[in-house]
Length: 433
Image 1 (cartoon, rainbow, N blue to C red):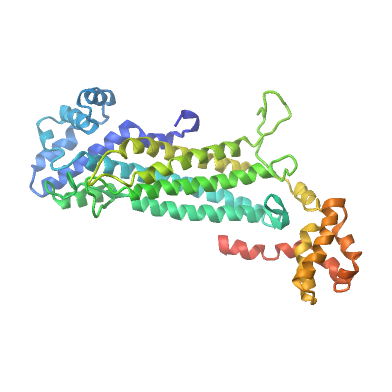
Image 2: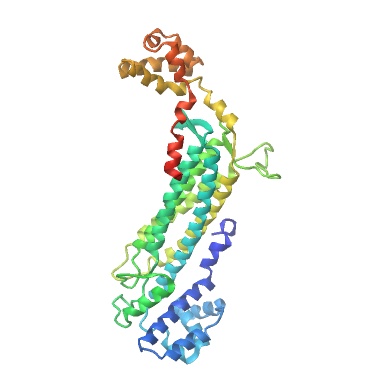
């Protein structure tokens, strides 16, 4: 990703220095296990740890790779330049994928930990705003059209519950991806003892891959990146809501507009939902990483490298993009402005039409068939749409309606509190307590 959409914490996971450090730890831990099994001298295993460079020379490794055309061999050659004669015991019975795939598992686990922290902070922000706006009545919409009243707090609670599910999904994806393969050329352990894999896995906080062929099965990676895609879709879900609520005709919520901020190069009055629009774009990009990860599952026999170039690109980009998007969303939620007075204005915009269902149900409870009740309510509702009439006044003037619902029973049906009586129940389901 370009620096504009990159946070250093996530980017550092994908820096060559971190990758080479993980490669070294995989090789050095494997040597420790081989030494315990008596395959190589214990002194050599210790020398490998002691003589390895504190920082790997990335430029030197790149220089070697220009000749070898093989990144792992280039790294091993550079390591041997520091370790000396004992380097002959490094990579005993292993294949490149043992190093590459196990390293990728570690990096994705590291990335998942950062993303889980992002989600925790987002959940805290959503919960705070939900509690603040729990009883703030606003217009609920279906198809973008006024439907029935809801509360702003329920919007935040819905997003909180969705992101809480996403956190569970990411925890599961993290556990699924955290596997280790040190099984040799086609995964048969012909030249290396399975106990080496178990030892390395324990040291790196991974679990041994049950059947690894020459690579870790790519269904794990597909599930991981698909989970990131689901989280991105949820981010867009929130962003779209903010964008709609900030429209001039609605203006029930608005992104914070900081002092000195400019909305347009041509129109000085503009205050645009640029953060949520940016999040929509980032979500689209994140979703683009999912399909290649699914296509990576199908490899020839025990291994090919058709997945390799894909993962070298999407692993950093997908995690960096989502990390940036989550942090941008956290700031958006924390600083979002809400306007109760505009919510009230919009609630009254259709002169009482939002209570149509309650009138419909009341008529059916008085013995009117549902078909006739619907017809009575709709014919009065259309006068509001088409002639700007007041819904309650039209109902009171309709003798077919008042024959079943006199004024004393009809007027109480136009009560906002009726629609919010179970808000506490929903909040207890979401937040407990």
